[in-house]
Image 1 (cartoon, rainbow, N blue to C red):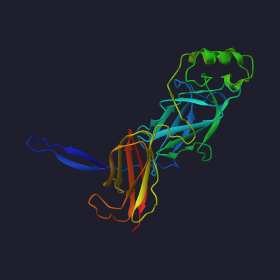
Image 2 (image 1 turned 90 degrees about the vertical axis):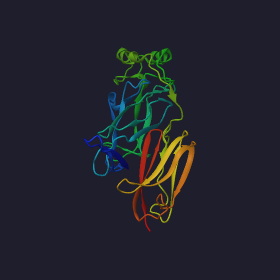
Image 3 (image 1 turned 60 degrees about the horizontal axis):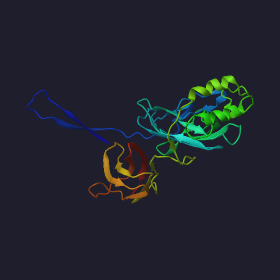
Length: 303
């Protein structure tokens, strides 16, 4: 992409000179990027709360040179043995060092039985799943979750206290917050500070859901000659900028700029620049900016 700087002289009569500076588009290297849980509860269990006072996801995104990528969009999704109440924010962006920490604001509908809920978690960056650290390349983490919100309505109140009271003195996993095999006074001391925690739920969470995140697909065919189709999905309408860049980041062609309805869309690039001239064979990037997110993918033109 091009950035424009103004070089200003000390002479007030001399105008500023615009200088174009090329900035490389960083593409995540998914083999060297990873996700892991932080602040895990006892026995490697995840504790989630409607106000995010519990375990969190930690993500590190790097490019193929090992450099951290800033502003990479991170979106988790979940599927499990019991219903979830998941609340915003359910996305994050990496900081300057390529890291992001995302507390999970959620509750669990554990009313179906005393067992802990087993939840699978998948985290995507730029539409691609990240691998979990220290798991041999797995893209889904499956483990037991605990929550003070025991009926999955995204608020911790007297209804949850009634469920806790029913478990008191038993070995119910769903309310055994210190994981010692018995629901007792210490568990109540761990549950009680969460009373009153609440949030607005986000509906439709499942394993393949990107929630409110747009998704940019890989172009097809790839490699291609003379044209290729670039597909993307918007879950809500908004301004979309879809552009093609060369390896140096210099713009080659603007494919779309403007308001776009929600749903599935596809744009065909005919391998030509803004002047209608065929571009040379090589590697190009296409990038989509919408809803404050930026995604980019690589494609190859072979003439």
